[in-house]
Length: 288
Image 1: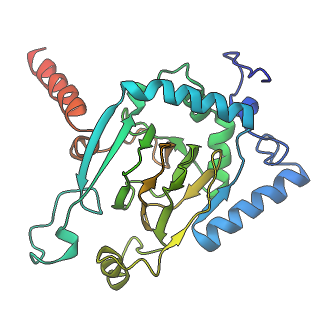
Image 2: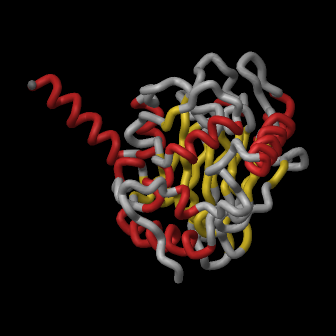
Image 3: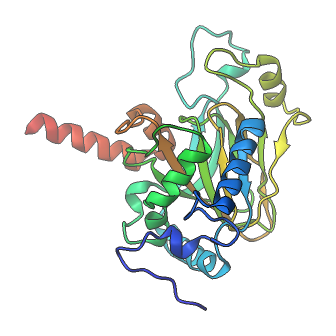
């Protein structure tokens, strides 16, 4: 297996990404500019950009091995939330689908559980990768998420598990599939189901009632890098089948530098570990 350059001064994207297929290191060249425009056009037309084989095979093997070695230390979370990841609106009728909470079980490493020296953390910290994500979205500025728990996550869905329907807390979610399930584990979504002002309630209610006829699915193999406007399209992952867990790195970015996610949402997602961290921090602040 070819060596991966792990020099501390090296931008890890240059060592892990298949730069021949995806020239993110030189987006000013004719080839790089054409590639970037294709990505931008896909985002504008579909709300997503899917790059199969973004990570070189030997680098993907190293990333998968690294994540699988860390996952036994992760919390197994039973996550219960509504599709907006917030508290239930008590003014809604009792039978309104928006009051319903959905549950799934995942093995999840939060950002604070991923050491800075790991390959996946160094890939996420890559300035070149961040700039590529920014330019695909045509943003003036884009920052890596400042939240100590949500910035970078590694999530494993084991056979029999799925990811419940939800909107993301930021406009665009970026994922890297590190290990695919044998079968199932499809990323499914309802395209452009809401905007900043409105929501297609008919389509959303139909999906929540079990009608998936209007959903779309990605064809994704391990090593696929995906940019997706998850803040505007209701989405989830279908049940994983077979014997191999589906393992994904979730990379979060934000136009607003330094913004963090609310304690309520973080506790809903990460459970008692984060609840205890925040409580101990609050107690220390009071006693200081």
